[in-house]
Image (cartoon, rainbow over all chains, first blue to last red):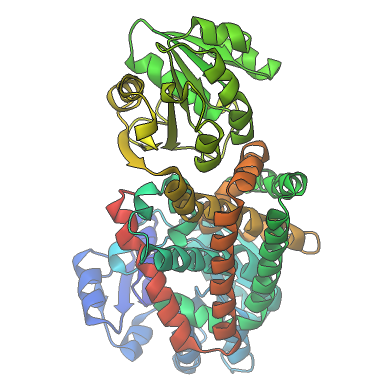
Length: 285
Length: 285
């Protein structure tokens, strides 16, 4: 099978490496706008060759879009314009509503499967890619009734059977509303923590020597790629803004408790938050 | 050497286990108000015996206070009342200013060394204790000129030589101002993230199935013990309140950028935050 992966960063590269590990008779064609990333992907053995977009699509049975979500929005209609009823197009973007809307009335809509693998690290580029990123993780497929049955089957053969991912199905609008809370918001809280402490550091040079593993863990996502995240925030603004407003309200509530030195209420607020133990155990984290 | 550890939770227990691994001819006496924790500490081999406070102090060359900081504030003057000029008292609390003030004019002040090991996990109790928690980490000693030279030497023999910790010295007031940013604040951002998402979950049952490793990492500290943290927040209110106000301002700044869909500014804000990479590399995280 020929698979064309558009975008050879952390996610596209890891998808390629994971498939190569698990599948036989596979040829991976890369499409990549950065010459540096294209060269790295070739030298790391992530792809068999790199082609321009149209040629890559033409040679592939399956086309995987693994670029930032603004580029998916731009490329997906062009890719669908070109595919036949034998090809399958899968996107891996972290937002799903606008992407699904963009091609809702496209004549080749049925060839498209809207996916979101819940997997990533704070690193980016082909050099961050590794075969074990996707196996065992969750893959959300949105608006599956809009996809052809054989396109879904092809997607499951790759992500469920070969990559051993847990598949769940969801409406694209619900996906974006939920993911704002459990993924997009936690990136913003980390970026903001980083900026707050970095600004403070200007006057107080020694503070980072005092940072431990707790700080590192909480601020880890602040290393994430702005090229990837800025378009996600733009596409999911409404939901993220609501989540962020609730988060700020929570902090202001605690700040009032703190300023009153109401230790009983402070204790209660943290006890409530401790319930996250139960939840994280439930999802195996 | 006889060491009396008051408070046999994560930190007290790990100090005992670390010392047992690295030091010879050591007898660890535990003082613990929870009968359950006392029994666990005995059965896990954390302590050789458990005694009431006064007897524990009497039998020890070194007394280590590893309780929540409100209990340190209460017990430290009593402990100093009882010690001779041959005994050393060390506290391991996450706040230092009030604790140092509390005993500033105590006749036995010189027997006391104010310490803060930058080490911990989100777990608590003797069952969370492990010998490797402290080795390799940083230990901040505050207001060292107020301690006797031999008391400092005893402290360094344990924490620097035996436990292999990096020692740094700091003024207690500066310590509390700095640590508000790189430790206390990140706990609050995690507790608030947990509460925000848990509140949302009431209406949206499926959201946690969508959580990945990024969310887990950011929310990890929300599992921390309210018994430990509520008194820290009370003792360091002024500094934490200032840090939290700056953090909320940062979030509001980003929310304005988000609501205007100003992707260029959003990108720039995240790029600034990415600088945390350099810092975390510098501290080996």
